[in-house]
Each structure stands twice: as C-alpha cells, then as structure tokens.
Length: 164
Image (cartoon, rainbow, N blue to C red; front, side):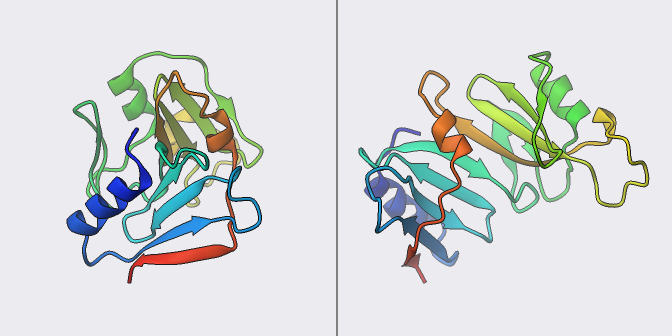
C-alpha cells in the first residue's frame, strides 16, 4: 500500500512473469474511477487512486488461489479454508459485522475487511456465522478514506494488458 502504479507494475511483472494481468481504467472518467490491476489467476485486484495513482486498496477475491497472511497470521491458503470462526479467533473481537444486500457477511478490523458467504452446499436456509466461509477480503490503510474504493465496482471500458 502506498506504492505508485508504475512501481507496482514493475514489481508485479518481476514477481509473476507468467501470470496474465490487466490494468483497467475509465476513458470516460479517468480522474474519478480507480485504476485497477487485476490478476484473475491469483484472485487479486489492486486499486489505485485515480488522481495520484497510489495503491490504496488490495481486494482478494480468490482466497484459495494462494497463501495469504496478514501481519504474520495465516488467513487462507489452497489447503486451508478460512471460516468466520477461524478469522474471529485469530483477529479477536470487533464490531458485530454487517450483512450485505447479497447476504454476505462483512467483518471489519482496522486496515482489513473480511467477506464471508454461506457455502452453496449448505442445506440450511438460515444464515449461521459458524457456517460462513471466507470468500474475499480488502486490505487498506485504515486512516485513509477508502470507503469509496471499497464500495465502488469499477467497470472501466479500457482494459490494457500489462503482462500478456
């Protein structure tokens, strides 16, 4: 977090030379829609401020694609499925969390927000926190105003292949 787009592109291409990644931005509104570096295979999206092109948020949507740690704590890996209970026991108590319109459950800590969902195989129609599995998370600088970056779902019309 805090690196500029050029630095991140160079680092990403050096670390993952065989992983296709795409930079997305809005041609219509380049100064208000975040720039995004997306790597589907790794399940990550890096969002940059449209004005400063500084990395403001990391969105992980493929929690089983790689091993993810936060401050030395294992969150998930290809061999470990994180649940609400495992995240709560690792990170401790926080606010009660909230349900989204899509019936996902968000659990927020300073600098990270976890998104849980009910497994599709679940028979129960009731939502139970102990059944919720981690489906993604956002990492951000907690004193920044990143709520607009988390809430926004940029669908820019101009993808540029950064590493074919």
